[in-house]
Amino acid sequence: MAVGKMVVDQDKAFHVETHGIDIIPEHQRHGSPKDLFWVWIAGNLTFGEFVIGDLFIQMGLSLWEALAIDFFCAMAYVILGWMSLAGPKAGTATLTISRAIFGIKGNRLPALFSWIDTVGWEAVNTVLTVFALVELFGLTGLPHHGLGVTLAALVISLMSTYIVPILGHETVVVMQRILAYGLALLSIGLFFVVLPHVPWNYAASAHPWAANNTLTFIFGLSVGLMSTVMSWTNYGSDYSRYLPKNVSTKAVVGYTWLGSGIAAIIMLGLGSIVGTLVNSQAYAANPVTAIMKILPGWYDMPFLLVVIAGLITGNYLNSYSSSMSFLAMGAKIHRFASALLDSGIAVAITLYALFLAPAFMAFFQNFLDLAVLVIGPWTGMFLAHYFAAKGDYDAPSLVMDTAQSRYWFQGGINWPAIFIFLLSGVMAFWFVDSALWVSPISKNLLGGMDLSAFVGPILGFVLYWRWYRTRLATHRVPTEPSWPDVKEEGEA
Image (cartoon, rainbow, N blue to C red; front, side, top):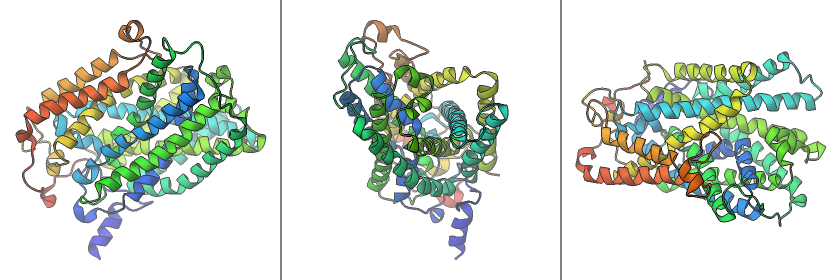
């Protein structure tokens, strides 16, 4: 009875979670891999993936080529499943686990990049939620112009978005399960609305984004990979860390892959299909309004609900994992305080974008797209470490900030790993074709292709794998960790 009560007290839905990035003791582990299905299907039934699906059409690809990329991206979510495997093994959050790669202090660099990425997308999604709520106000006959209306939409957005991740892990899991049903039904309903009008013979453009259609298709694969699964890899273990250590690895990968993959094929596919029907200029200016113009009037409200609910469920994960990355940088505060501080920063960015510099949001989104480049090499290195070490972590050492930690390396930093991380990121940068930066290699030698989504992760994986295999003896943990001796970090 006492153990059961402790589990409830530590991680109970609609109560404040007390664990931060400290190790979850085995007797407090709970839940099932099936929970991951609901977390990831709701997290990916978002308007963001819808926009990405349309992007493949705007790049000049045919509908069937775009749908092929959609399928590729859905299959690639197996990577997110692999990234979730370390959670039950180590019992802590993703960016804390990567201390085994970079060192206790060295890991602050990738944790910082992860935090910038996650808190940034929080702000972007909050702004988009405000815009969608204002549209909903107008649809229901409420005032939908002026400062007061925008402020009202912002308050609703903040209340809907941040209460859940501030409460913690189990609240996020429960709410994702609840919202997944409604999101799936509304999204599938949209399929049937647009299905009779789909031009299945929609041909590729005579002026694709890259030098020819084949190169544009490869470009689309890279953009799709970086915009979908690679934007989630730094979240994986945050939601699997409460599972028992001996949980089925196949179940963890399978349910994560199934949930995120189904959501991706629905939303990316819808985006590609709708992209053949809408005016491209109107879509670029305001995608929500452009799509509503092709829908029957009776479906306008369900569509807006899909947009709003999808943005909110995506932000549940953004906000929760952002607070985990903040703690992984070394902040000595409670998870609750970290979540509050993180949310405050996201709100400040949102206010700036809404009221002071509206054009800032377009620049900021492009910046975040480039920032994800850093996540690619980190993802490759994380997976290389997991598979080379066979998921064997010295969990107590992950939360020690002293030289007694097995992951202290040289002064708390694993310099070879830092070098591989930076080198892989720089190499990926030279294969980019984006709104803010076009590499001369991409422009002059690759016909306009962007291969950064392949270069960064593959190079990071290969280089770290080779380095780790030569130093295996210095990393290997010979004995099972002693859970009672774990020193907590991120908690008072």
